[in-house]
Amino acid sequence: MKKLMMILSVVAASFLLVACGSTPKTTTEAKDVFLGEPSDTFIVGLDDTFVPMGFRDSKGNLVGLDIDLATEVAKRLELTIEFQPIDWAMKETELNAGNIDAIWNGYSVTQERKEKVDFSIPYTGGGQIFVVLEDSPIQTWDDLKGKTVAAQQSSSTVDLLINHESGIVDTFANGEIIQYPSYNDVFNDLDSNRSDAIAVSEIYARYTMKQKGAQKYRVLDKSFAEEDTAVGVRKTDTVFLEKLNTTLTEMEKDGTLDEIKNKWITE
Image (tube, rainbow, N blue to C red; front, side, top):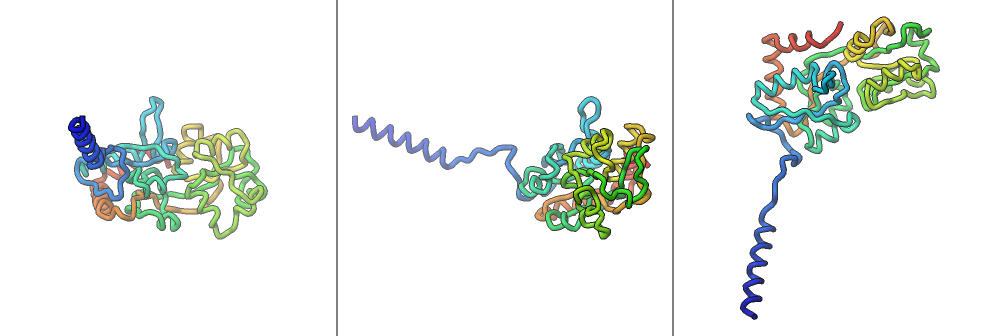
């Protein structure tokens, strides 16, 4: 009986040692560094409602300028690409936690964001504008005084407005910007007359107005900011950033970048 107990104890101890010595690996393990080696899985984080950069078509497929651009870069670097819709307000957190490898979705370069991520070379740019309904009495910035103005939460639009040298946000109703999770919500707010005006990326606005009927809207005379759009990566991913910049430069030189931009950007 004692011999049997000893044997069982040895067997149990062996199993325990094997269990302790083996750590199961999962494919969803967060990354500290992404090198962008051939066959690596490249996870791109995006807001899948942001036309024309990355959005769902009528069949639910992800399409858009940034989808085409990221796909072409991944092809040239021999990466397996995955697109991961994220809460846009959490984009830098998702990136720095290693859950995604890039923020690539009309991501504007701002000083505040530079403190959290590294940016690729810019691949496009544009303005930030105010949009009103065609029959609105609002004609100029001065007419926004006391009016309800909406924009997308955690967007560069909000940052640029809050930091605008004119202090224009203080003149809005209650001295604030009404913020929604997506630009879709922002435009819907204007369409339903809950907001008097919206502040929005010009690239997004021009595309959306064309889809909804440009005659329904009017853009106030001047943009309140100009900005560059680039890809955001972790500050530890210097090797990948160099590869990304080299590839974007090649695509600019061979005309691929302009071809993709011309497909999606509405003047």
